[in-house]
Length: 408
Image 1 (cartoon, rainbow, N blue to C red):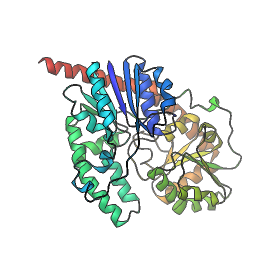
Image 2: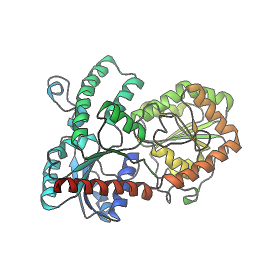
Image 3: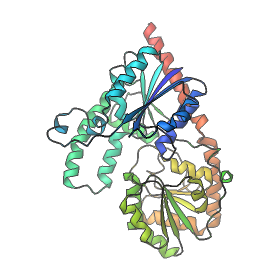
Image 4: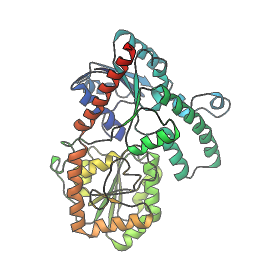
């Protein structure tokens, strides 16, 4: 296959979940197919990373992009048919580069990442089929944010205007895309129920680099004191909300039973309310770290108290592969088909979540059983080569079907 990838980011370094998804998909497909890459380079800061992708892509083009100010509701946003979250990514140079790539190369498929890039490929859909890979389903994600976060009435009004436009745009893309690729069955269910029941959808769960994320890959030992880790980008609303819920409703319950507990908050760009958690006894906020693996090894358990979903959490599959047991909400673990009390511990109320954390910190036998089963599950189901092989097969079937329909 000849494939063109268009991304709204340069997926390097691998410090965000979506970067890992796009990077490993690119690299695995390039082992057997010809892949060209066009990526939006936010603030033009990633030119030095070109050689990383030139090792396995035929052509690589980064397009410098500076985010414009968000438009006000009146008069601009109100009369703009595109949702603001999509229109914000206007990039005339991407239009030019895409037209040039399509004119000089014969692609079997264009693979785009996320809804923000759909406007660029819609007008070319008769020339070459496109597939939209989704780190999350935008409408589902935004509605979850609306329910979980404490927005002001003005914010709710602005967002409601966006939800209507996003719903219509989701329906348009679902009608015109050759396929959408989602991270889990919950995403597929949402799309079929609320967007288009007959749209072509395939599920490709997020995976893990099993050679990189394994206990012996880096030095490190468990802390002597019971330790919980929470990993992720700390400027991301779902992670901020998860920590707010944990410290507001769960942490005191855990401390009451495990007074010596330590909490490690590990991840880039912590917002002020996350940094403020470091003032609590036993809580550490690291900010960006060069390697997350030693922090997994320090912890007795990773918590994933997410209440806003969409996609699947790479922090979970990384933690399983590293041998650090996971306590998660079902939303946090959606799409992974983890079995409670075997692969991980699952709970959805503050009381139950605290109870599962306490169990994991005070019952060594349970912790070891969940650790061993979780590692086995990661090795069996979440390696990138096998996951991308499944996507590759779907792409080959799609291309064959589309070619067959043209010859009829």
